[in-house]
Length: 345
Image (cartoon, rainbow, N blue to C red; front, side, top):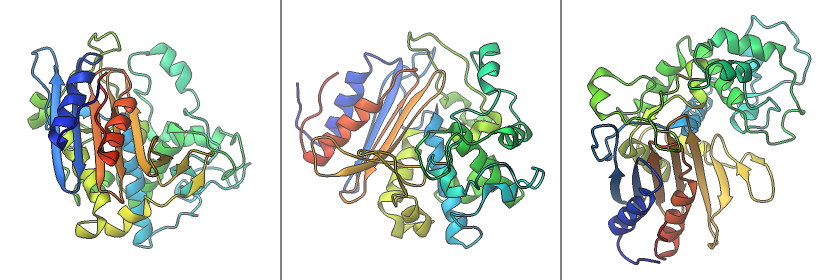
């Protein structure tokens, strides 16, 4: 079934259709400057309906905040995309027994590093409900020093939480601060994203969603620790939508050069996928356009954020259930780009 109508109606129908599969979720969209946000289901045990100010763990959507911090440093001339990451970690033996891995390799998943840091798989077996908890930046760097790249950097796409986590820690090390402080200073602060945080503040606790398994059972939140640059942020649909709008209108606010830089394709993974600095660039099915997007998932949350810069369209879907929201996000994006109706679930 399809429904024609305005932006708010399309967003509402998407949220209500997806609520059948999720404990709770919020859908938000922008088109030509017009915005709409709609929540459905429950944010937690009290049964409160989530809205644009409800906090969700956004998982790997965090990566595009980390890569924007990289782009900000690059546009200021503080480092380059071909800067070797080893330069940030002088404690490593030199030279390492592999080709140099650069910041661009890490930001485009072309470093050849594995998906997970060494030892995390065993750690996850011991603490399944919180697999990254207790991993320190020192553990991450030491693991990098022991790790041999699986492919020559720049040759092959290999999605890597390890790589982006290492990038975030390298940027923080160069800045003499923590990754959490770095993202606040370089990205969320300048863009006015007050509800995008690594650690939920006391004043935000009553707006925090409860994560659920795919079977809709409450589960503990993940503690990403040293891997936080790859997946540790909490945010709201309002904030993520504002983040997308900054990408759609980079000349009208903070970080204009960095926001443009992250949208440029850097590495072709295959026929259908190009990788920018963090963002994935793929054709939008059924249209002549491409879309920049990223998704995320933790133990109890899933997320999607995508935008089409030429048409001024952006879509956000945040769920407090461990079920993918990619299809919902892409279908709404297609509907907003083409003017078609929104399919029901």
